[in-house]
Amino acid sequence: MRIAHTTSIYIPVPPPTHGGTEMIVHALCEGLTRRGHDVHLYASGDSQVTGTLHSVVDNATLNDPGITTYMDKELETRSVFELYQHATDYDIVHCHWPTLAPYFAASNPTPTVITYHYVDRAEHEYYRANVPNLFPVCVSHRQAELLGEPDLPVVYNGLDMAATPFVAEPDDYLVIVGRIIPTKGIAEAISIARKAGMRLHIVGDVNDYIPWARAYFAEKVEPFIDNDRVTYTPELPNAEVLSLVSRAKGFLFPLQGEEPFGMTVLEAMATGTPVIAMPRGSMPELIAHGTSGFLVDTEDDAVSAIANLDSLDRHAVRAHVEQRFTHDRMVDAYEAIYSSLL
Image 1 (tube, rainbow, N blue to C red):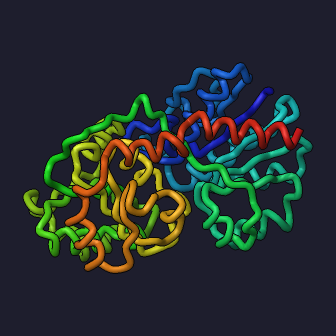
Image 2 (cartoon, rainbow, N blue to C red; image 1 turned 180 degrees about the vertical axis):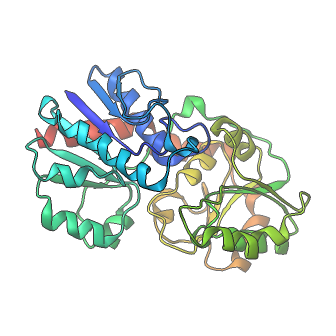
């Protein structure tokens, strides 16, 4: 098959630091190329793929201080416009939300698959009403339920297990990785770690694209950072994040919102580090309670779970991911979707 993928030009593929969507796009493009498909990626010019790269910018706009918000929107539109100028040359177009591809797909005969890495129900309903040849794919069954269509196709994100380190004997600290926003439960993780008498390492950026993020960080997170009991790192290359997570006793994820997937949770379990999470969003689908981590309802329950982390076999934690959430399984599922549309 000849397949075009398109994603935002804001971050390169793969990302230089930790980033979920761009990691998945890269893994999918590389996996499809290895299987003999002719893969074309429309992304920023500093992206790196084995297939053919098309770009309207030399570098991701995140790393270009000369790009205004207005020009960023212009270039995002131009990237997708140039793809759809040649869309009939492809068997399938696969876009990764939040690109603007749905608005071009409406007038193009080539089927467009869209993976909902994140999406609101209002956007989904608009696409359903106005773009009949757009085929959505969810990243969890819970996401499909929240969009009002529980029967939508679901493809779980996958990991390259060979590139994911494993540590059998961890150090005595906890970790949380995620954007510094209220729904990720960063403040709650600090509270839980303090109650448990454990050190906590936080990794996550304060993104100005989310207006309330910086105030949340200043009020709820920064006052507790002492680089002893609570350590904070804004961002790290993915390999360094995995190294940090692999040596942790446990990964805290006390979600306060409906997470559609949660790549950091998958990565933690792949390193052998069990996860303690609230049973919101996709967490009950990702975590095998009592095997790869614990699902808890309250902060006090989380503290109790921390005391029981040693009861979990870290080899079994990793095996849980190997059995269900690999790159190969993800590529298999998307190949099947493409074939069904053709």
